[in-house]
Amino acid sequence: MARKPPDIADSSQCLLPAVKTLFVWDFDWTIVNCNSDEYVPSQFLGDMETTQRFRRGLASFGPTRWHECVASVIDSCIDETKCTKQDLLEAAASMPYLIDVRGSLGDVADSRVKNQCGQAIISDGNDLFIDAYIKKNGMSRYFTHGIETNLGVWESMNAAGAGSDDGSTSDDDDRMQQQDKESGEKFRVLYQSAKYGGHSCKRCPPNLCKSQVLSDILQRTEQTTANRPRIVYVGDGSNDACPALNVLNENDVLLARGGRRRRDPNSKSGPESDGEAYEGHGEHTFHPEMHSRELEAHVAGAFPILSTLRKAKVNYGIVPKCRVSVWRSGKELRSLIRGVLDA
Image (cartoon, rainbow, N blue to C red; front, side):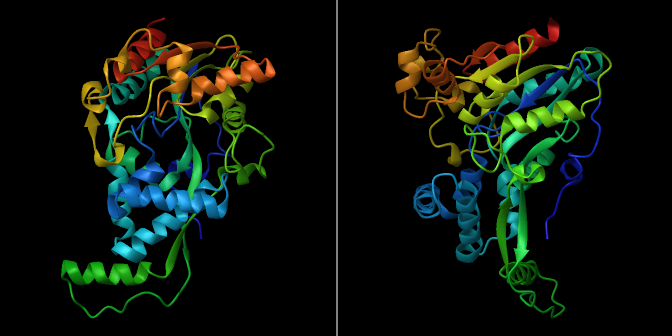
């Protein structure tokens, strides 16, 4: 039933190579400059319609059942627009990204031997969309310590749903046969946390706890000294605050994304400069004083990781043990990454 790509399938069993520094990346709004779950269906249903369907889905399924909404919206794409699974993957492969974020990933990959470092992704998305993007952009070799995320699978609802082959070789006929075959399948997202029997973290949604995943990666990473690898964690979301509070220690670094989400991310594709991504957002987007609490808390669409950390401090007296640096542009992130590599 479940299709698992080779780079993800056996991640819970394999021993990972020893490294001095492990770079751990979030995917949505970090590696790509959008939310993959929203981007893909919006390419077929339109941005406004996709947003409305997610709102209705969350009202129906419940606020913590995001991935049930994703499955429902993806199924609607196939049923209503007659797109194929390949069309969906091609859309995922074209997601927008900041040029210097992509460059940062390459810098780490190129320094793998010299700096004894590795990379991993921990994402709340799904492997089908992430894998399509990673392969299209030539990054399959980057993630030496795996891609941990939810599994996107196709479940057959009608085993007899495949169209008959009349011998035609035209592209249109082939596409129609593929649509007929896929009309009997439904998209589902299998929770990443199922491999551990679930989790009990109150900060994270039921499908995935990033502290649980990161702890598992570290446990499976070979050690040549008494100390575990230094972690450099790059993320933007509230669930990225979880490992920052629970796993990262004094030797680690959190590179937290500040500022706010770009406008109309689902209308873009491929590489973008910082200027292109935030044109018209106002000069305060990259202003050096933007770290002020008042601005971060009230700007519409602000990345939630910093406010989540502040709430943990105010409500529970918990603060990260690691060093926290903030980036608001790809250029700033690349500078921070190079600083770590050159240290």
